[in-house]
Length: 416
Ligand SMILES: *Cc1c(COP(=O)(O)O)cnc(C)c1O
Image (cartoon, rainbow, N blue to C red; front, side, top):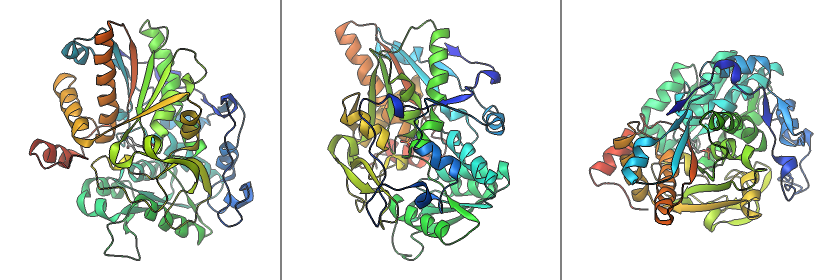
């Protein structure tokens, strides 16, 4: 029921999907000139190694040794078969999940935070500025900066800063400095787009500081492919030739991309992105160039977007409240290689409760979106009498999201 591998089976190269896409990916554009952004345009914000990965068409990119040493503190993560959920659903489907909740920060996010901190340190950078919504990315980066001896400044969306002290305390425990964003509008609850503007301004104004983004960009999805590469090998150990369906929740697209991208070239493997109806970028957004932040400081990305000034309603799955999507995920959906679906918050929490009461673990509200879609696919397999193999990404645990569970259990959760 549980397939683990020894630390020496962590993949030693990342899988780059870019050269395998059916249609080429559109380049990022400079926010001022609207011409393709060159390496020099990005150099004030990112180390050159990451800029080169961002535009790389090499099929594989080696993972540096010091990065592997840290990933091996918790990787390979387990692949687990959700037998008890299968039984509860009375489905012929076989449900597997890749458990990224076992990392120090409790989610997949350290998979990219660690290499990002590493490449910054290699370039002599002393300090990294970033944004965080619910605190998951900020805690992953604070952890990674601690291990490489870097300072970490986190602009945390004010609503979360006030409501979620425990993620802030994790960041501070790892040595991060956390402030509420937007810094210049103390009455605003903030948004991810505003916090990105704050962090980009900080990094742009200091020589010793770079910026770091936890999702969306090509190099972030690249770093996350260790998830899917391990899962492929573990499915073989479990006696499965291939999954029929790969499912992930999608905020910016990094955990979904990490799991699904290594399956893109494989025929007969269906890929599914799951998002909240209240921030339904892939299912209701427009496919066009848009800024990554609210103030329009970042390059323009070709993606599905609800508009860079869209402020999503305050749902508990904070990690899924982003107005855009990764250009790679957007490309896959636009060309029909990946499908997308959306669920409302109540349906998602019902699925989370069913999961907790069968499999035992308490998922992050983001992860519960993937669980809801998995349950629906397993029920459909029952109706069709099909032995489907479903693989989904268990992106993080919900042990610091218990307020959301309280709201659901006491009937205070908003439906959307
Ligand atoms: C941040 C986060 C997400 C959403 O981000 P992606 O880049 O879309 O993966 C999903 N699940 C968890 C647990 C997260 O922390």
